[in-house]
Length: 159
Image (cartoon, rainbow, N blue to C red; front, top):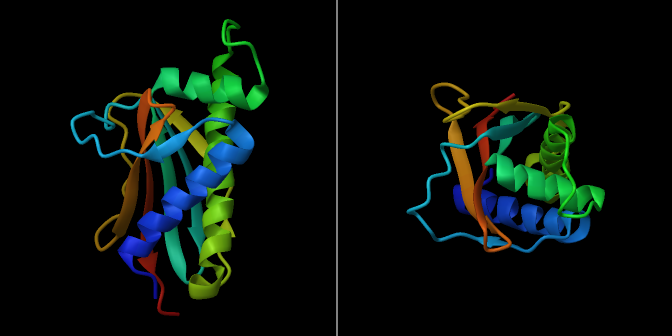
């Protein structure tokens, strides 16, 4: 149905589209393997089901999340931003990127039903879809300052 390489490309292109049009921040694929993304402070997720079933996740540090929220809301970089607004921004990133992924996969995966996003904070956050799940992921460099990870954990349904 969908191969891992094309899903990585779909994730990257979807993220680029959203960051360019809605967040107004430069984004590129990161080749920096040395920087740890697992110690992230915020994890925005959104689940989907259809021919593919799983979860899209966007993981980033608190300073990265705050920078994203400030840009999305058009605030001055010196302004304080509420934790609630930062979490809302990361949830919206997951939602918009999933919408772009859904559009790009429509031909090969059919219609995907999507949940509302959720955001959790903590240390060394990870998501897990259980045994047999496949994972497509891309490390992203935002504004040459933040390294984040965007991933898609999924099962292919044979129904």
